[in-house]
Amino acid sequence: MVKIRPEEIKVLSNYIYNVSGITIDASKAYLLETRFGKLLDEEGCKSYSEFYHKAKSDPRRMLEKKIIDAITTNETLFFRDTSPFDLLKHKILPDLIDVRSGKGTRPGTTNLKIWSSACSTGQELYSIAIVIKELLGNNGNHKTTLMGTDLSNAAVAQASAGTYNKFEIERGLPREKLHRYFTPAGGNWKIKDEIRAMASFRHMNLMQPFVGIGKFDIIFCRNVAIYFTLQDRKKLFDKIADVLEPDGYLLIGSTESLTGICPRFIPKRHLRSVYYQLQ
Amino acid sequence: MTFLKILVVDDDPVTRTLLTKRLINEGYTIDTAEDGRVAIEKLARQFYDVVLTDLIMPGGVDGIGVLEEAKRINIKTEVVLITAHGSVDNAIEAMKKGAVDYLQKPINFDELFLRLDKIRNLKMLVKNASDLREAMDVTEKTSAETIQDLEILVTELNGRLSAIRATLLQEGMAPESRIRQVLDGLDEA
Ligand SMILES: C[S@@+](CC[C@H](N)C(=O)[O-])C[C@H]1O[C@@H](n2cnc3c(N)ncnc32)[C@H](O)[C@@H]1O
Image 1 (cartoon, rainbow over the protein chains, first blue to last red):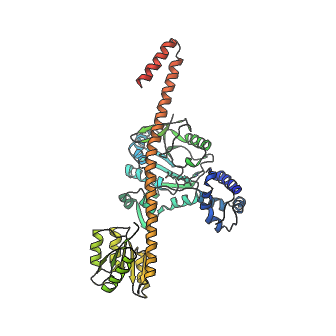
Image 2: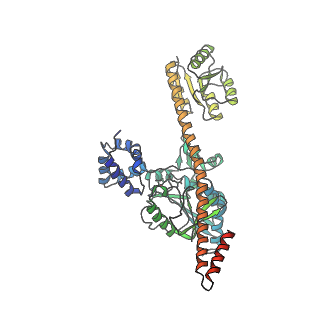
Image 3: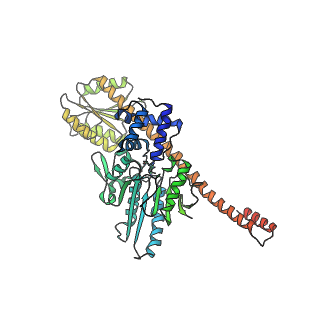
C-alpha cells in the first residue's frame, strides 16, 4: 500500500475540507490510507501527491466525487435512536397538522415539507415516510413533500434506488415493517413504490449557501455536523434556522448539542426526546 | 465460540464415523444424524454453528431439505453440502439456496478443515462487529441522555440568569430589595 507522507496529509486534508467541510485530525492520518488505498490503486497513482493533483485537475470532477464517497461516513440505520420517530408520530405531525389545517387558503388541508439534510443512503427519510404512511394513511387532505439530500453521490444513488442488503435491513427495522414496506429483490430488499414515491433525493453540500430550497416544516440534521469545525457548525445551523418555518421543528443527533452553537434555537423536551424550535 | 458445534448428516455409517472421528480430533464438537428427518429434529432442539450434510439421502428429506429447514430455524447456522463427484450443478443450486460451501466426494479432509476454519473466522468477525455495535449503542444511549439533560438544564439556567438580570436592573426598587428578591428566587429554585 502507498504510504502517505506528512506534507501530503496536510494538502489532502485541506482539499477534503474544501470539498466537503469534513475535518480530519492530523492524528487520524491512517484514516486517509485506509479510505483511499483502494482508490489510489484504481486510479493508478503512485503517491498521494499525484492523487491530489489528478483530483484537482479533472474538469469533470470524477475523482473528486469518488474521494467524497470514500471519505464520508454513511453509517445510518432505519429508525435510528427510535425516539425521534416516536416524537414525529405522536407530537410533531399531529401538532403541525392541527395548527396548519385551521389556517391557510384551504382549511382542512396541509402540505408539510420535511427535509432530511444529510440523508446518507436514505434510511432516515424512508423511516419518516413510513411513520407518515402509518399516521395518515391515504388521507389526501394532508400532503407531504419529503426531500433527502447528501453530499455523497453514491449515497444519494442508493437512496434513490431504495435497495438494501440484509445487513442494512437487519438493523433497526422491525420484521413486520420489513414485510409490509419492502419486497425481496435478489438477495436484497427494495422499498415498495408507495413509500418510494413519497420521497425525492438529490445531491447537496451543506457547506454551500442554501439556494432555492424553500422553507421546511421539519428538518432532520442528524450526525453530520459532528464532522465539521465549530465555526462551520455555527454557520450551518444559522442557515438551517433561515429555512425553517417559524413554528417548524429541528431534530439533531441524539448525542449532539446546539449549546454555544446557535442561540436562535431553543431546546424543548417531550417525554424522553429533545427537539428544537426557533426563539 | 472458539470451537464450532457441527451436526454431521449422512446415511452412510462409515462416512459418519470417519467424519466424526476426524472432526473431534481437530477440536470440534460433533453430533450426528443418520438422515434428513433426524437432522431436522435435532436442529429444532438445539443450535449448531455448522451443518455438514450429504446431498443425496434416502427417507424423504435430502440435503437441500436439511439446508432449507436449518436456515429457516436459524439463519446463523451455516450449511456445507457434500456432493457426489461431478455433481457440481446440484451444489451450485444449493449455494443459491443459502449453503456457504460444498465439498465433493471423496472428502479431502485438509480441504474440509480449511473451509471450517474460514467459517469460524467469519463468524468471529461478525460476532466482533455486533459486539462493538452493541457497546457503541450503549455508550451512545447513555451519553445522549446526559447531553440532552444538560442541554435542557443550560437553557433553564440561562432563563433564570436573564430573570435575575431583569430584577437587578429594575428601577424604582431599592437596591437592597432587588437583591432580596433575587435571593428569594434562587432559594425557591
Ligand atoms: C453518519 S451519516 C448520517 C446519516 C443520517 N442523518 C443518520 O443520522 O443516520 C453522515 C452523512 O453526512 C454526509 N455529509 C458529510 N458532509 C456533508 C456535507 N458537507 N453536505 C452534505 N452532507 C454531508 C455524508 O455523506 C453522510 O452520508
